[in-house]
Length: 106
Image 1: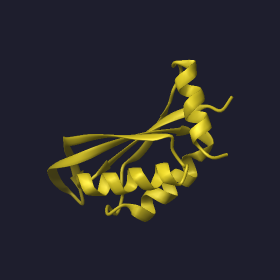
Image 2: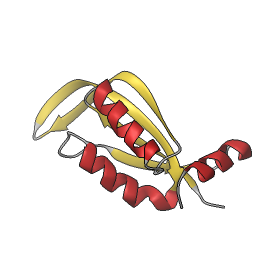
Image 3: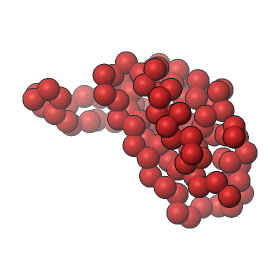
């Protein structure tokens, strides 16, 4: 069975997050995208402290799709260096994980 990962990505707006999420689902790169509206992010960028409101996307996909998903997000994203990080799913509902595998194109 394919290993499943969760990918976290932040975006500058709800519209951008919806565009990225919808595109990746339609293209079969991810099974789904959850969008969490308005998270507050504190970070340094180019030496300056920033406190920004962002939107968090949570994607579920097959581990072997990470490189393709990362490339596609970078094509669609407005940030110069978008956050794109993945963590493995070590446990989960078998029926849900099977659904994820079946939704993502081989």
